[in-house]
Each structure stands twice: as structure tokens, then as C-alpha cells.
Image (tube, rainbow, N blue to C red; front, side, top):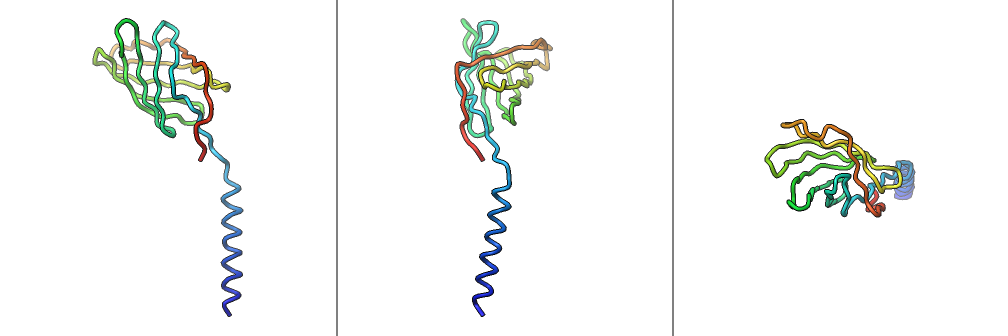
Length: 130
């Protein structure tokens, strides 16, 4: 009598395994590190999973922007605050080779940064999968 329950349990496990293995694996690109801006500024990105923290460094003034957000596929989005006390939002698209992001920083107070920008990095690789 115990045998049919064991057989059913084994079949249930097998079905669960098939269902889980049929789900696609989602990779999160590694964008952590230093990225060069188009106007001499650079960005330091910290990443844990899909969470991102960014600092903009503008020589000779130092840190001129801090923000946090996330990466979803090839889209990097974050809200930020500038050293002048204004705030804004950014949405960047990571290039397929992982070495460039294009998009906009848009200050919600001054409207500065509405023009497209790009940032580039010397290297990027996959940091984790889930």
C-alpha cells in the first residue's frame, strides 16, 4: 500500500522538475564599475542583483549626482539628486555588447539634461542568473 504513494510522489517530483526546467533563465548584466560620460564626467555604478546605485563625478567638483534604481533587461532606470539639490530621473539602454549605455538624464526641476547622452565602459559581463 505504501508503494502507490511513493510512486505518485516520484511522478509529482518529476512533473515539478519538468515545469521548473522549462522556465527561461534570466541573466542580469553586470554594469558595476566606472563608466565614462560624454562631457568629461564619469559615473561609478554599484550593483547588487538588479539594484543599482550611481554616483556622477564631475572634475574638478567631485560628486555631483547620486541616485538609485534598477536594471531590467537592457534598461537601466534610476532617480537621482544633484549636488545643487535638484532631482531627476534617468533611463539608459545598455548596448548588446554591454560596453555603452544610451539615454537621458532629465532634471525634474531645471529640465537640464533632456538631450540624449551616452556613457561607456571598458568591460561588462554577466554578474548573476536567476
